[in-house]
Amino acid sequence: MKKLVAFLIAVLMLVAAVTGCSSNTTNPAPTKPAESNQNGQQPASDRTLKFRLSASLPSLDWEQTTNTRDMKVWHQMYEGLYGMDEANNGYYKELAKEVALSDDQKVYTITLQDGVKFQNGEPLKASDVVFSYNRAMKNSRFNYLTSMIENVEAVSDNTVKVTLNRPYSPIDHTFFSIKILSEKEVTEQGDKFGTIPHKGGTGAYYATEYNVATGVKLAAFEDYWRGAPVIKNVEYIVISDEAAAVIAYENHELDYFEDAPLSEWDSLSKVAGDNKTLIKGNNIMFMAINYLSPTNNKVLANEKVRQAIFYAINKEDINLAVSDGYGTEAIHYMPPEYVATSPKDGFETYNYNVEKSKQLLADAGYANGVDVGTIMTYGANTSNNAKMAQVLQANLSEVGINAQVAVMEAAVVTPKLYAQDYDICVFADSGNYDYNNIRQQVHSESVGMYVVKFKDGPFNWQRMEELVDLGASTSNIDDRVKYYKELWSMVMDTATILPGLHRPVAIVWADDLNIGKPVPTYYKIRTFELKK
Image 1 (cartoon, one colour):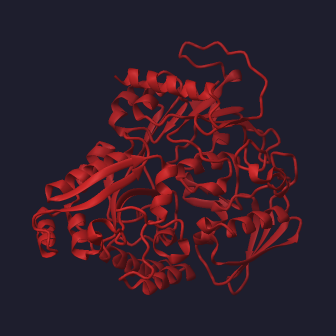
Image 2 (cartoon, helix red, strand yellow):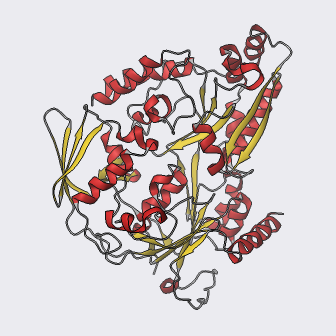
Image 3 (tube, one colour):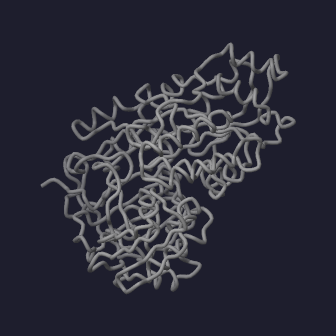
């Protein structure tokens, strides 16, 4: 059955490619197919490393999406003032060479690295940094990253001054997240930027072909400031179906397969041999309830109904369905072992309790059950999100709560979630090493990012936002934990966001590939090597 599914998907992808669905290329010269070695892999000199995309890449402009899946591609093409090194605990200076902080902790004077060029050959200048930050600051999607920035200005060609409106200790994540673009490239491409290949980044790779339906091809930037990458050609292929992705790896059609399905871990492990790892991810899968939903006479506005939903959820079931039991049932928004400022306890956790759930329903006036609408999520029907949604549906049914499940493309679903146009949703987040990441879910400045709108609701949202700002205003770890503990306790008391699972990240790779120390999210292909 798996092979049949994979065959059908391959046929559909081929038809899409032939009909030219949303295709944009730089028309590279045709190449002669290379002969395969005994493992079905091409010789090192001709290898194109192949990676999986679980859904379509909506743009080549990093500002158009904040999905972690897409950011892994951006990590190859673009760079920020800071980089992310998960193998060595967090942020490091990337395009920034030196950083000086003023006594009032509001002015960062940043000297840029020497000899950096964009992929179009233009030298990196402070004016490009100013352009990139001003562009991001106009995008409401990045308010949570830029609201503290008062001004960005070029002091000289290689020096930038970033002035904040308040001390802000998590600024490292802003410096990492905002990617630097060539002002010349973006200006020249105009409205086409992001829809066609470009050379507007400073990263080790640039796009040569882009097809929304099937994926993107990258080539090494030979004049990359750290030195030309060893791996010369990379292709990200859209394979939404998990079974098809597993078969593609087993057939040596994927060289690096991360976030592989744990239900197939035994099979994948046999094929991978020593080329595999399971890493606890710095991630969260959670359920959110839209208390503003008009469904069924605004039934989800009833706090007791929301609490009943929370107590009905069996996280062990979620773990088994999504991670084959390899995951960690979550009570935190961010794993404390990854994030030093994450509160460990001191808040309601809504432990699975069927009887309490039924009693709360009865207290709310629904002793005979209630319909709460639809559990909405994104991805394929076999995705982790879909599996969690199906578990939630079954758990709720056991206590008399009826809900449908709707699984659609991320490009369709996420705008609905950000606009609070849903009843219940399954959502995921990952990749941040500071608890200030909670800002994007609870602070009103993060419009276009949060899935629950607390502002103007029946909660003390003013105090919640004050606690977000207090947590960011000091670098003292103990003080920050204290603020975030109060904040997370308040969020949990609203019964709108319920952590479900921290997933392990399963990674397998080709037997002739050396990936160095594995990381759960932000790998760098420029550090990969082919074995001799």
